[in-house]
Length: 257
Image (cartoon, rainbow, N blue to C red; front, top):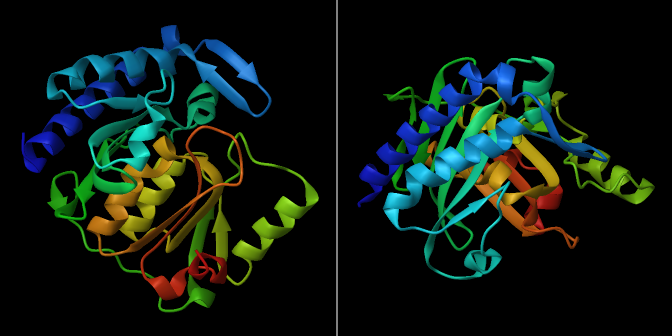
């Protein structure tokens, strides 16, 4: 399959998984695991099983939030899918209409294509470094802020975030200097909204790769910039991540990566 075919396949699969999540909420909104700041529902598992079944025909290995995968793929040059079947699980659980299905194709740590389906708003974002950024199949040109002082940043505290004093101080150093800072409860949509120009910058420490991979592909498709740095943690595929419409909108800490 070429990239266009793979993008089409991933888009169709994302919509199917989104339909499962929206139509099966009554049955799937059951807590499977709840530890610390994280919660896993039956919905997470069901959606990933569907996605894995649908992508199996591509013969490309899969890393998923629920079932894991071969972490060595991020250090190689082979293609692999990386999937978050339900990003924004807590929003979904509490009835907040902001959650999505996120599917990315990567080679090592380089995004190849990304698909994010915002289920409640029926918005499908697609694109990649060699593919156009599309919103529901139509070209979309973002408008980003002219300066950091006028920019809006989206961020979050991932479930594995170290809430110690030093980590919180470093976090605050990243978000200072922006006009507005927002947390929406879904990293995937937050990064997609940078690609759209709803936000100008995204930053999150120790976030898992499946949360942001598709969004990073979208930002690059839209002409923005992305930065990935392995997080100082033992958690599987955790990265410090920055994305912005332009490099001058990034916090100073990103330039040191």
